[in-house]
Length: 237
DNA sequence: ACTCTGCGTCAAGACGGC
DNA sequence: CTAATTGACGCAGAGT
DNA sequence: GCCGTCC
Image (cartoon, rainbow, N blue to C red; front, side, top):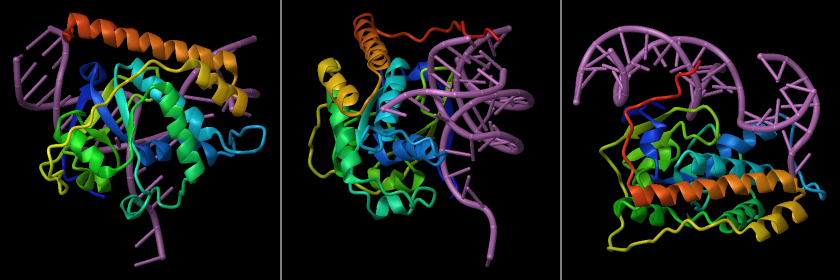
């Protein structure tokens, strides 16, 4: 599909503290299936897939460490999604979806359950933009589409945004949705991921620790205000 | 001067340990 | 009756 | 840096 919006590439540092929406199917199609296709499926002791949990956990951690606050957008995986040809062969079971929601709850990451809620978030400027497919941009009401998200904690400097003039959906009423990012619930995470899904506890705790450190950074930055630094110190090659 | 942005091109999991 | 889509990266031109 | 593991 041809891009009809205006593309801009920005440094990830510019997004520090920014709140963004992420289409859950977009995220899943990006990390989970590419991995599963390689026959390296991750499963628990009963053979149930766990790739989605590991990927969402790692991806969310990566975003937080890069200073970005995600809110995941859930919705019926219907026509909207299936028009996107690259992903339409993938159906995600409701079991997996519910597991992801449970994971996000324990992680303290907010999510919404419909496209219209996403539209409200955008309209009220609660979130800056949305990471989703271009086909979904209009119905989400997103003028800014985000690409190249730093899902990994490593070596990523640029992020792309695509600006559109046109959106087709609206929230009529002046609703407002408040988003909260909480501390991860370590106990439940361990119970869920380690006891039920056989994650390695040591690795999990390391991850949780990094998430907590990221949240502290947010708080400090909020207190002191954030100014862009014109200085760059990552030019070590 | 340096940084930011736009565009064309190419490759395709991420991470950690040895 | 055709791969398609997305992100990484490098480079050149614009902006400050 | 390559190569096996992640669950």
